[in-house]
Length: 167
Image 1 (cartoon, one colour):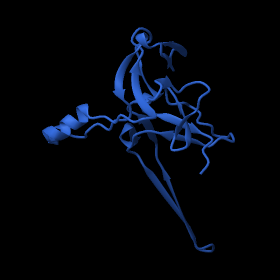
Image 2 (spheres, one colour):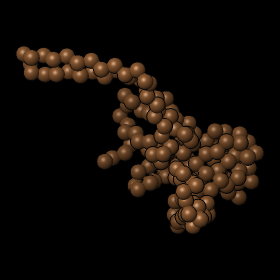
Image 3 (spheres, helix red, strand yellow):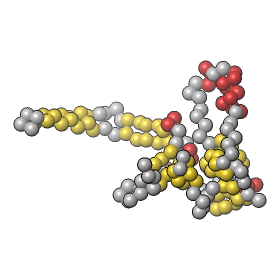
Image 4 (spheres, one colour):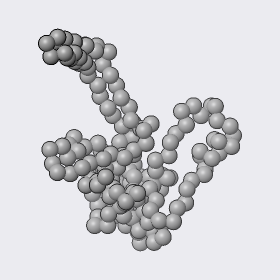
């Protein structure tokens, strides 16, 4: 029996409780109507089948009914959760169910969020204020732009958090 960890329920449960929802982090076409039949077929059906770590989407059907991403070792069908670190290009990755409020600011951890760039939505408030001040004696020009913006993920479960990254 394969046990899958649901990040929302925070339980390890049998595979029968879940439904496989395909490969994770697939970039959706911006305009599907412009794709040829072959390109559309490839988008819908052609997926990687790597030997090793594979990132997948799962749905906890018989529980919270929410989607989440999980990393699975395809050689032994073992889900990489708990004590076994998930590595992506040598960087430890930790799945997160929702975008956290605190990403480690003020701590000694280096934190990176990994996601598809098309998953990031940025909104800017229309009222942008620009102020400038020139100090001739110092030979400086100071420009201050004041604006409000917000950043959200279209699919929050499509984001992974890497901690203690060494560059």
